[in-house]
Structures are given as C-alpha cells and as structure tokens.
Length: 125
Image (cartoon, rainbow, N blue to C red; front, side):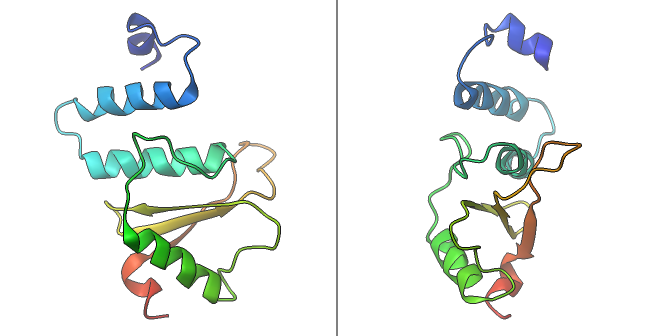
C-alpha cells in the first residue's frame, strides 16, 4: 500500500487526507466489504490517534451514536473517566459500538486499548 500511495503523491500529506486516499483505494479493490473496511480503519484510528475524532471519510452522522454515548455514560462499567478524553464510534459491519479512553498507550504497540459492546445488547443491559 505504501508503494501505491507513493505513486499517487501521498508523501507528506495530512493524516486525514492520507486516510481518505487509503480508504478510497482499498474500497475500490474487488471483493472489499466497505463496512468491514471502515470498521477496521475506525478501530485503527481510534487506537492510534488520541483526538477521539474520525476523519470525514470515516465519519457517519447517525443519531444512534448519541444514544450509544449516553447509554455508555449511564452504565458504571462503561462510564467515561472524569477528565479523560474518549473516542466513540459505531462499527456497522460488526454491529458494535467501540470506545476508548485515552489514558495510557500500550508501551509495546503504542496503541490505546479499545472496548466494544454489541449495539443490540447495549440498550438491553
């Protein structure tokens, strides 16, 4: 993929632009499930970028996300930690909500720990 990016002039471009290039390039490949591709890229972005925000190419406006954030906050087991930034997104291929509290990176992988809950079960817990 790096070679494909280099051929298309992606060196030194902003991360969001590179993410959009990568998503569009992979989505155009034969047999790619776009929902699963988005799920994987969302998980990667949340685990590696502590802004908690997704680039436009991965962002989906969905009222269910707001409901999921509220539900996570109401449950003591999934409530956000005070003063800690959190990223939350819906994974449509997996039918899950993924969330991450940006407290401590794994010292080996450099990634933040992701947590998932089934969308279907989130509202029955």
